[in-house]
Amino acid sequence: MAYPPLGDMLAALRETTPLVHCMTNYVAMNSTANLLLATGASPAMLHAPEEVAEFTALAGALSINIGTLSTPWAESMQLAARTANASQTPWVLDPVAVGATAFRQQVCQALLPHWPSVIRANASEVMALTGLASQGRGVDATASTDDAAHAAISLAQRQHCIVAMTGETDFLTDGTHHFRLTGGHPLMPRVTTLGCGLSALVAGFVAANREHPLTATLAALACFSIAGHRAGQRADGPGSFQVALLDALYQLTPDDLSSLSQVEALHAV
Image (cartoon, rainbow, N blue to C red; front, top):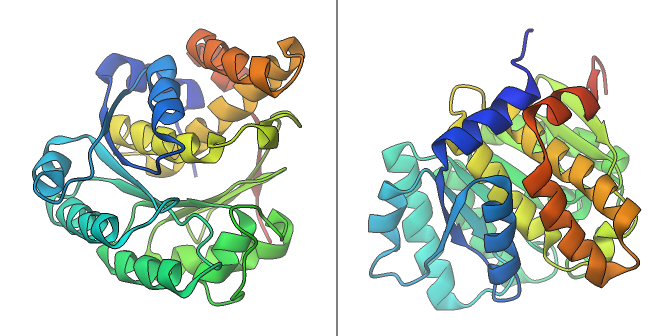
């Protein structure tokens, strides 16, 4: 199967500047907005039930992150996801620590019937969503992407969506086509909310490339991988890394994305 160059996905993002409606956690709002702006998308952070449905219908994509859940936020997320499904607006689910509490499991189980376009999660979260694990240690992954590859494929097939499972090595699947992505830098797990920002960035890429959601998701992950590697070469620690990552995302070119991505298509898992 032929896929367009990853660089085309970044070029489309910067040409269209998609508006991404981010329903994300308190910790991630600022950093997520900056990551989107640095890469070329436009962020908005809205949670009030009085306006989320109206705004979701106007946005290019929706990103839902359950990091700091509350009952009012969960209700707003339901409204937004329902609207996205009805209006055919692509949306991304980031099921933060879904295996940690019954409340998180219930919220995610209520969101899944609204058919997210992409689920972006770590291995433990993927396994929790597929019922293969009932416990998770906060937002940290306790399983590797290799351990959870079959769970990711099963989840993608069940939900008719793309599953982007990120970690030391990333695994991407639509249930039929599978990819492994390497790169990044060891400092990335030392900076909070990078995964949250990546989920929103996936939403932006899919909004700008609706005809190629799988390639768009892969391009978003590749952006983070290349930029993370470059930022790590300049940084002295987590603080300077965060600043360097924003600069690296801003400086990334479509040619960089097409030539430097460490992507492997997998024929069997």
